Length: 95
Length: 89
Image (cartoon, rainbow over all chains, first blue to last red; front, top):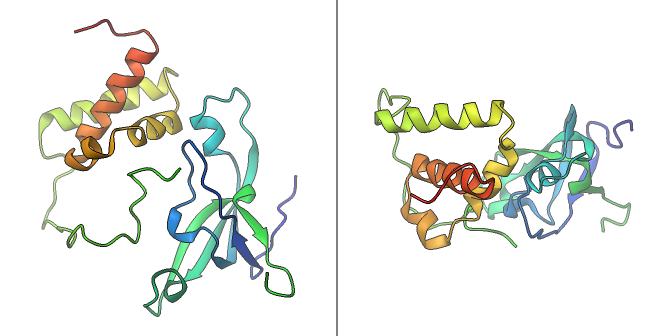
């Protein structure tokens, strides 16, 4: 599986609310960010936490968000490392 | 569902206390808890992500009242007991 997203692409974090452990902080769910870079492929933490014998292995991306989008204030960026299945491409109509 | 650990961006906890020359551990037992967890993960008793999941399974009122390494100790005890490696005290 080659990385689906490239640096500079805009992605939306899936607005999921899984039952168990996840590495998607609540404050980015549903928000749009920008791919900074791919950090290689890593076993999905959600699967590892659930004791899955063969956890899914996916690209992990550093994604940058405007602090103002997340908090309503602040001119800086917040970067979060996210597995590929946590995010989806933002369509042309912005949805 | 989001659990009690997921407090990023939440207000009301007050300012972070930043200690000058903060030591790695504030008590010997904390260092032992740290070492114990490393040994259990390295020996394959449980995975680091299972450990994180277990910390997050703490009852919210206990989680918020506990210190960082008290949460670690809770998770170690819980996981070791769940795996049948620890008898009743």
